Every structure is written in structure tokens, then in C-alpha cells.
Image (cartoon, rainbow, N blue to C red; front, side, top):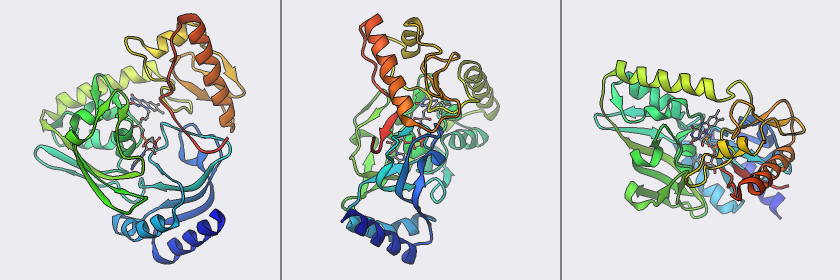
Length: 306
Ligand SMILES: Cc1cc2nc3c(=O)[nH]c(=O)nc-3n(C[C@H](O)[C@H](O)[C@H](O)COP(=O)(O)OP(=O)(O)OC[C@H]3O[C@@H](n4cnc5c(N)ncnc54)[C@H](O)[C@@H]3O)c2cc1C
């Protein structure tokens, strides 16, 4: 039954929308880990009008939907995703900088938003200069660095509930959020968001960003494929320090290894198997629990079928 709905949806989207539609798309191509299975359907609307045309079709098909941003915090299991992956990174990435607010479409790169703010002399979002991925993903996971967090600066967002087709507008005060967490409706596709900024000196902001980027280059294995930090920091602890002191650096399963530069990063040295990452996650978690009696919680989003 689901195959019939999927084929019907694919044909309707091809007939009525201008965006890119792919069947059985390998999702490793769209994640920084570069691993895992395929999505039954992968749809990237051409722009927000195209998305509006697609929403009623998507809603009526009733398939599982996964919004994918830059894929920098996502691990797709080897069985792939039985449903539709929707990506706004090609068709919704406009950034408008106002006096005290920046409006960014959800597919815009977080790093580009930070850089454009710097050029325009707007301060507040420089912590995002080294965070890869999209604004949609940054909001969903309340991405942060150097003490700054995405939701702290959010004024509000617009999105669509893909199950009902309803438009949703939320102010920051409507959203409960915390460390790497934003309490948002499960079927929400974030489309656009606003962020508070203040006047700043472009050169001072640039110098701060240079410092942040240099530190990151030194402390993270940026030339390898990864999804950033695998685990959240447990309250009062650094996950990287716990993993390191439990002796996990260099631990490997297949081509996936605990980085010797930053112990909370797992790097993919050329494998294709998400199961290797999952097995390594289980081993590290087990070792840290045995040594420190602390349970690590995954920060990376794990999706799809085994
Ligand atoms: C080298 C490296 C360094 C990193 N450093 C940091 C760091 O310093 N701080 C930090 O917090 N993170 C960091 N990360 C992790 C990651 O970059 C962030 O979590 C990022 O904000 C994820 O954005 P994304 O678009 O790639 O999300 P994705 O991985 O594409 O998706 C993540 C989640 O967001 C959801 N999502 C994406 N777009 C939308 C949308 N439009 N609507 C609704 N839901 C959506 C997805 O469904 C998924 O649940 C790093 C990653 C790497 C690879």
C-alpha cells in the first residue's frame, strides 16, 4: 500500500512541482557522515511557492517525512528511510538583515547567516560561524558554541505541519528549549526564522569569529567526515573528556573511529556502514558507563530502518 502511495506522490510532485524529486536516493550523499541507506523519496522544492504546491500532496500521501537540513547532525541507518526526505537547502536559503532582526529561510547555512551578519555589522550570531548545517537543523537541535545557543537569539519561526498542512507560527516564548533541545511539534517543517541582533563593529565581530574558527580548527578533526559531537555533554561534564579518560580514543569498528583529536567525534575513514557507527556508539557508551557510571545520550539524530 505504501509503495502505491509513494509512486502516486512521486508522480504528482513531478507533474505539479518544479523542485528536484529523486527515488531511492542514497542519503549518505546528503550527510556529512556519508553513510547509511537510501530514502524512498527525496524532494527538494525549488522555492517556497513550490513547497506550498507540494504540501497538500505530501499531506494526503500520509507517508513518514524527515526534514533534512545540511545532514551534519544526522546518521541514517543502513536500511534507509521508508518515506520522504524533504530538503530546503537548495530552495529556501534567503537571508534578510534588518536593523535589529535577521530573517533567514530554514535552508540557509548557519555559517552564512553568521558571516552576513558580520559583514552588515550585526552582532549576536557570531557563535554560529563554525557550526555547519542549516538554520532549520540549528533550531531543531538548539545548536550552540562558545556559550551561544540558537534559541536564545530566536525571535520566532514559521513552519508547516506536514501531517495537517497547517501553517504554524511560534514566538520564542512559545517554545520550551534547553541544551541541544527545542520542544517543537514532531511534524513541523521549519520554513523561516527570525533572530535578534544588535549593532556591532564588523572588524571586532570578524576578529571574534577568526578566533572561534582557529580554535575549532585546532580542536576538531575537520578534514574527516563526521557528524560533530556524537554525545551530549552530561550535566557538569564534558562528554569528550569522559570518553578520553575512559580510554576510548582510537577505538574503531570497521572504518569508523573515535577521533584522536576530539574524543566526542567519530570519524568515517571511508566506510559505508551506519551499523559500524551504531556499534561504536554502543561500545563507547558501555565503556564510559563502566568507568564513570555515567550514561551518555546521543546528540546525533539517528533515523531510518536497521
Ligand atoms: C564538524 C562539525 C562540527 C559541529 N559543531 C557543532 C557545534 O559547535 N555546535 C552544535 O550545536 N553542533 C555542531 N555540529 C552538529 C551540527 O552541525 C548542528 O547540530 C547543526 O545545527 C545541524 O544542522 P543540519 O541542518 O545539518 O541538521 P540535520 O543534520 O540536517 O538535521 C538535524 C535535525 O534537524 C531537523 N531539521 C533539519 N532541518 C529542519 C527543518 N527545516 N524543519 C524541521 N526540522 C529540521 C532534522 O529532521 C533532524 O532531526 C557540528 C557538526 C560537524 C560535522
